Image 1 (cartoon, helix red, strand yellow):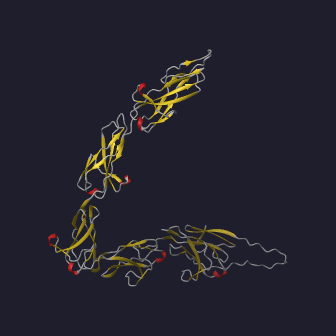
Image 2: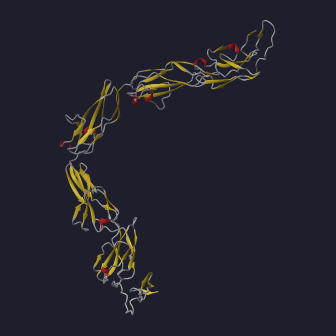
Image 3: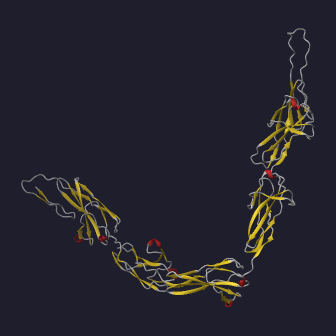
Length: 562
């Protein structure tokens, strides 16, 4: 048996037999046509499905076609395009595409084709690059030629002129408003390269296309003054002044020359050259006193020469030593943990003086005896608790090349503490050897993370005229010792690094000895001693309450039994 399949466009297969007739299997029948998906434009990928078939095919073969029109007779095989996908190339531009799918089984084969795609949009390509015609010279007008394009049905173009530092496209920037087919070169283009981005507008038959023109050479120009030169420096005898070149547009790069001039008034007709003053710098001499100075900067290259003068300086004056116009002043409140700040004052002098600061500590408000604080040379000074009672001022020294002058600020102080004692510490207990005496800390305002300290003292009298620290007694409680007998007691309390000590009240009662228990004669050695029983009472004084425990308890002086 020989089997031959004819036709590509959905024609039925013709079967040719030789020999005896045999049973023939049913050939596949197309139920739904193959489909093409994707973007119908050059450079895009198309994908095809086999469609839907009855009498299940065992395999499929594929063939893509390129067609001039949507007629089968205009179609040609695309060689090598025999898979389910196909990438559109430039040659497919403005054509129509379809695919034929052949379904095979043991019985035979049947071919079905897809519908035509819409027209494939072409990608315009510049086969000959656009070129720029005209002299690469500032003031010339350049004209763009379009070049030659393939794959473009549009005759509509847009233009964007670019200014580039080099031939590399990455250095190019669009020139605002330069969107015509011609462009008049300006000063900003001097020393740059010009090129044009041309775009072909998209139509129903082609995509947008673009290409850069060939670049020009560097745009040349005789020097063009963009900004005048300037004179930097102090207008005083003995000072050095310096000229800037100003800004020139020129290519090739220009060389610069200088000529200094002296003017007797602000009228430039009064200016005359200063002999041999043709360097970039000029040291002002006594002959320039009470004059004005300007400089003429000349730029030149192979295409031309251009000179531009600077503005006039201020009137040339004699230099002078620093002189104070307004004294420095300290601001801020002199309390511990505060920051004092100083101004530098106001000064005159030519050249303009520079100032330095030196903080000083003084013994009194009059500043009669002040000494420098090592390292305190900034505009601020932080006051600490250790500075309580001290006075401060700042010495400002102004210096220029003519001389120096020092001036003192106002004196501030004495430094006071930021913390404030609201209530003194208190003590309570029984004034007897062996008894524990306790303290409560004072109440303070204006503290920052307070750390409290205690020191118990032994006093010779109740007025506190002669009190000494008890060694090791630095806690909130203290057990009275035999050495305290006959003395008075109090506690010293403070906040470390933030407050001066505060003292508790001294009770006008001397510390008594520990009482001895009475003894009685016993008829027999084995008779037990009578037990001594202690009792407790509560004593009050205003809002203060104390509990006293003893054999014969009594309230301390000033307290009443509750």
